[in-house]
Length: 192
Image 1 (cartoon, rainbow, N blue to C red):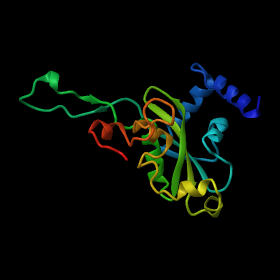
Image 2: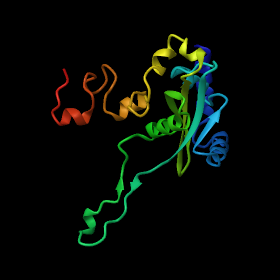
Image 3: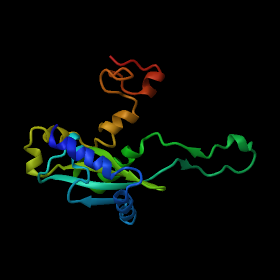
Image 4: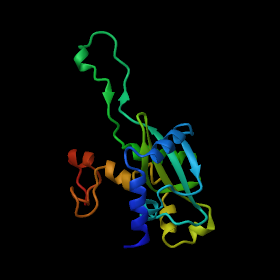
């Protein structure tokens, strides 16, 4: 067993549902802003799985998103109350929303990936891995240089959570991997 497997097991023990460590951390995170820059990832094993490397130009940000569905304004007059649906789920996942917020805050950086770190009754927290486009350490890196060449990855749904909410699965899992999205195939658009 490698070292990161042991680190992962320790992290999962510390982050069990009734853990005091998790409760203290989440209560501290709740008081922070919506997007907070960090010196390093809280879950190093998960960050490394998603492409994080401790080198200059790689940025970690913790993002706070509000849980639950969006509430619409109640329509006035002339409608049957049962037809005025008020709570609607988002088309995007909360993880994709978190990536978009981090991308807006760090406009000079490109989103590599993100992962879940915790939640309380009102908020869900994600850590987003970003790459600085202007940094020579990133632009000269053979792995990262291809990622920073495509601008607005999170907004266009090119991150792993974006691919998930667009309805495109990875090869061999679930739906066909060669189609653009569930909506376009539903409308009968053919992709050649």
